[in-house]
Image (cartoon, rainbow, N blue to C red; front, side, top):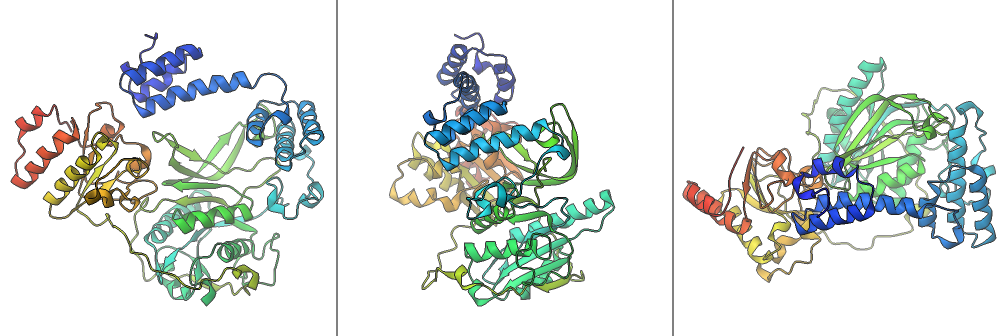
Length: 553
């Protein structure tokens, strides 16, 4: 048994405890103890991450030979090299060896980063992209100094308002309301008069301009054309990027489109919906604008921040204050924490607009104000034919799928049904059918599992019923979570439910922290008792206790 028994700690307590353990053998013993005990996914991830850290440190020692490494491995190895002379030697070795463009760019970027951290902002030599990388046929093929804009002027928060079949998506309304609140606070805090700008692209979208204003926009910019009836990656991305640059120093075609309503280079902030099309569009647009993107966010706020990272401050030990930074919160990949993403300039680069895609359902849909007034401008860009090289000849309208958002009750199932997936699904359906207005939801763990379901319940394991960050966001009066651990990705999809009742065999499951009632027990035994209680109108406490379950609030 290791000196530290992970089963004695909650996951939140385990992380700090293992930070003091620096012996790989000891960490592996702790991991085995966890597997033999509670076998919690989050705990194992924490321990495995700690083990991997020491293995990477061991592998990082010695000289780096790029000819023996893949580009991905080379990138990891370079993060520990801070000597410019050594980096230049690695670059020469790559040029004399495989001479891979991707590998050379990694080394050159590391050289640029180290040099940037060793010099003050005013001392760094800037080389225009065309001179520094003459071999590139398109500037965005390299992420360093793509746009040679210095001391740019940035204003306003832009919101891409996605539409479907001639109507705004609810997430577009949510973002407009959130943007309105953010910019009202920003203007008060910094004594400015910057605006919310709604962007519409499609066919007949001008008809939606008044609604966009009613939900919070000060300005609406739109481009409509029959060719834009359906979302297409190339024209939509090119149009948005062109609109964002229009009239500024970086405008490639200053004669195209109306930009008379603004006098800045690019937006200060920009929001996209984290829908299928929105995710596609946001990544391409932010790449074209040479800035960053925080994807799948569920929280946003604007505040000043102080950073000491030498890559951002221009020197080791320096501190630099950044004003009015958009803080973009998203669930961490671990599933148990939130990360806050910042898009910050460095001494030789400006990163604007600061951009985020927003998970649908993250914010309230505001009440529209029909009396609000705003400006409406048509961009009127002449669409090049080469943007439409792909022609849509035929299409089918798919069924809308399952909508769980309007139910008073949602019964959700997770990996806890794994011992008998078909029976677990049947029990969840029986409980849902006992209510007058209820339906069944599932976690991503079921969608991605290899569970073998019998045909009569197989349809309920499809992605259309998934609840969470990449699924539906629900707010029922009652949410019953059976066999669900409570990862953050799932939490964001149901956290605003009226009453949350969870059933789990693990008393330390994360979902307990945000449940109103927690039943410690096996869902295969507990769900039939709950179904009987709903049907009879009375909860048999003795029957529930016989399952081993106990409730708390």
